[in-house]
Length: 232
Image 1 (spheres, rainbow, N blue to C red):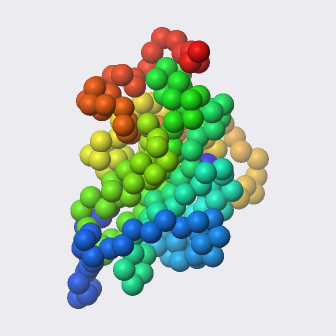
Image 2 (image 1 turned 120 degrees about the vertical axis):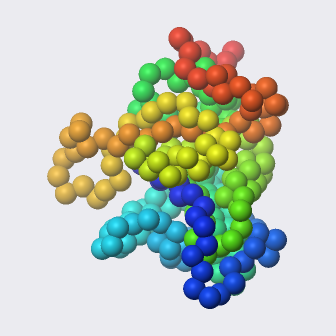
Image 3 (image 1 turned 90 degrees about the horizontal axis):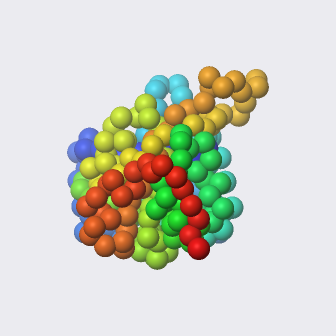
């Protein structure tokens, strides 16, 4: 299951001066570095998440499973913002051309999204984390746009838990567009067989990038269409 991205949150300082965006260094990690530093990335996840008391360990383990799975994907990339420690990160990978990442999409996939996926121009940003003590407005969007630019992507894609209204609102405020719902099995170790009612409803969000102002200004261009087709 694709992760639920997290949104920036206001600083909740404890007396320390939070780092501003111009004081942070952006650094891309390779696979070996991401594997070596995954415990530090998990710490960032726990500190930036909204886990209920007593669920931090389970959520941390789920994050590590997702990160491990993402690292194995072709084209995996992670970008971190740091000073003395990680302040934020975003990671993901290019979508496979056969479109398996969209499995569970409710209804026909918008034709433009299907075409861009089939042509290898869609990059999935599967996790976005910003430490709550980081006073750096726009940092999450900066990391996301840098990942898309580095991979020459025309479209960013992500899945957000429909129940996480704060994350959905954050992505929409950053220019992402909601194109529909995806149903996926829950992210769990599985002590019993899954039932249909266990499915998690995720919002499929896309971010046009490098497609020109018309695509960015007209969300309807990425909305449902009556039919889909592969590019010639």
